[in-house]
Image 1 (tube, helix red, strand yellow):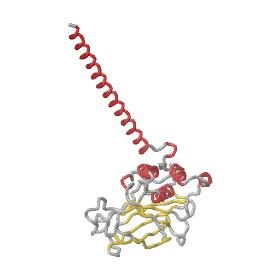
Image 2 (cartoon, helix red, strand yellow):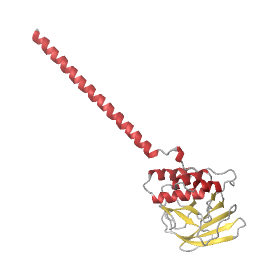
Image 3 (tube, helix red, strand yellow):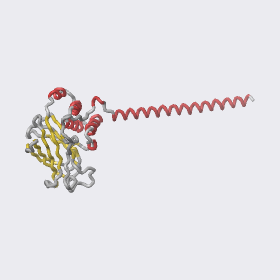
Image 4 (spheres, rainbow, N blue to C red):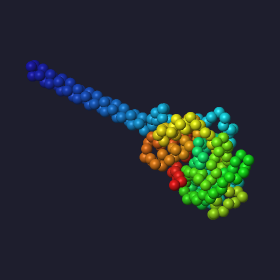
Length: 264
């Protein structure tokens, strides 16, 4: 009887030890799972979080003109008749708000446009005033690779005057030639003074300048600054997030991962 009691006691103790070990393992597993979940959420937050105070968005002013398209549609329907069939996007696009209009503080601003992979080997850039008087003309070399291309109005071009609106055109060449149905893009630009804004951002970082310019409706300069930062810091998650953010505010987010080619 005594022996049976001892055996039963040992079995009870063993069951308790095994149960405790299982419970301990379960608790440890739950703790590890919770830790991994928290760590994953933290990593996700680090990658995706952009502080609201540093958001780079575009806020157009109330006096901007009604929307118009920045893409004209020639009859052949693509950049060149020989445009590569594998190209995901076949049309050039001016990186502009939907009304194809933007402001700048610069006398010689930078504009950007999207160029799909194609056989276009060059383009002609022209600048006209509101009376359609030709002010500047230049040839542009293109590589044919898909890219977001920057074009800066050079010093030899007339300086944009404050308060004046201008229309720019980029007509694309195929096989070195312009054709009656050559594809082209166009947009409008107005130089504004904004003296207080210029003084306020004079000592700001480039990123903060882009933020202030975007919130003040200065599209061309905000975009150009961010494009420069994007090329200078291609591995920066912060700059990448802001570049996506600004393009998203005007419906151009699909071009955020396209390589950027800026003038030297």
